[in-house]
Image 1: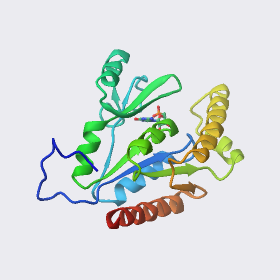
Image 2: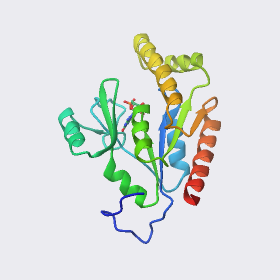
Image 3: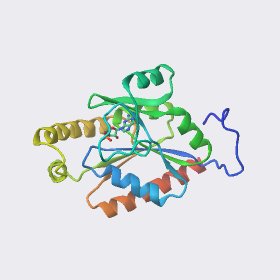
Length: 207
Ligand code: 5GP
């Protein structure tokens, strides 16, 4: 149940808020699928995480992330302001709890794009959160896609590849995910993801 103490109910509020966690290794198409879901579902909102990683040229502050310093991040941990947080590649990433609660109490579909560690923490607190894990068609194809992006050195690509295999194994071994979706063809994967989320929402509302 969402804590509504701080968010008085509005006439436009509904009871079909659903928390959607989307995870998957880099190169699986997770971000594209997330955008597809966000566009297709009118009352969806994307959670902008806080991170201590460096902002790249492609990043926009407060659109992609809230870029903050280590000491600020630590203060938020101390204040228990995070619904979940995790260390990914040596940098911290976290989801602000207050914002998520507020959006859920408004009846929205709240989308978190988070790693497996974070998803486990969310599922432990909110068992009816829906976990969607995006898989590449095969390991060979994942390696090919990572190389095709031409963003990184071969050393970094191999690091991401090893990390991806580890993440997939972790995801399959835990109970945070309700659906594993193979992204063979991006348009089909987006369509299937949208259908899955709509069905999960109906099931959740009827629950
Ligand atoms: P990137 O730095 O490439 O944007 O993201 C790296 C990883 O961090 C991705 O796997 C992404 O899903 C994960 N991530 C982004 N935001 C959060 C967050 O708030 N919490 C957790 N646990 N992981 C996150």
